[in-house]
View 1 (cartoon, helix red, strand yellow):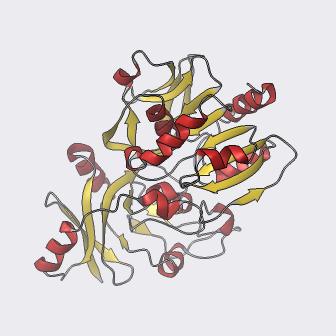
View 2 (cartoon, rainbow, N blue to C red):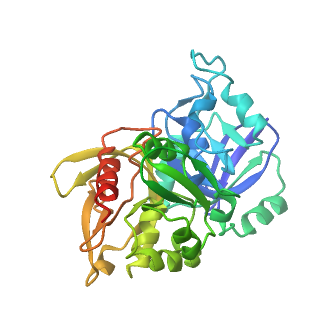
Length: 354
């Protein structure tokens, strides 16, 4: 079935629909060359339409071990060629069958690089995936629909669960965490208790943590002010490590500001300079918001990492407290493992009981 991706500024891109479907969401692109399953199941993409720039997708199928959440939260998937004959010793399903089972609208045979060039020029915006023959009234209704803002409530865990270990007890405030972050923390020895995003600071402290982890998640950090308020209450009590959305929430809790990027950073090939060592590291990223560096003036925060591409803030450290954060994903999945040293730094903080 013929279909199309329509952007709110009138741009249109033709393709083929995997199954009859229609959907709306913010259209964003990812520049990674591999890792389509990890991208599809990253909760940070909740309610978005994800465009992949790499031309061939699905060539190694789908496997449970690469899932990053309990299900996919994307609203749509736009790709170039959908591989008909995948092959991998780990494969358990084809990408096409996975998309069908998960009811994810997919538009393929699209010039995704043209879509990416348009978004880079005009900025991320609302769009729809629709059949070629959809009426203009239906199109107008879809484009007029407001985008959901409380996406963290959708992506977070509905209940507390644990991943037991012999090391320090770390409470993970789940805003939409990727499984590979949990695997990494557990591999480093942490005894993990994962709690829903709506858990209060008092409830967190009642669990007697040695440290607190603020992970990734979808949406605008300013849409969850209750999380910012709760983080303020624990700042001086335990070591804290934040990643992605957790980095932004931590900055807001410390009085800084955040803003929306024109088209975001999404890919497994993003260069970041470590200002403490002078080295450039390749990072995996997925965010549409950033910390405003001008708002750090007079705050007890030091910039530790910076994007090589656009100079935006990629890491912060408190000047007095055992609190630090990065905008990128040291756990990768997909991407480079250049940055796992950050888990070592967190473990050192926990060992010192700072």
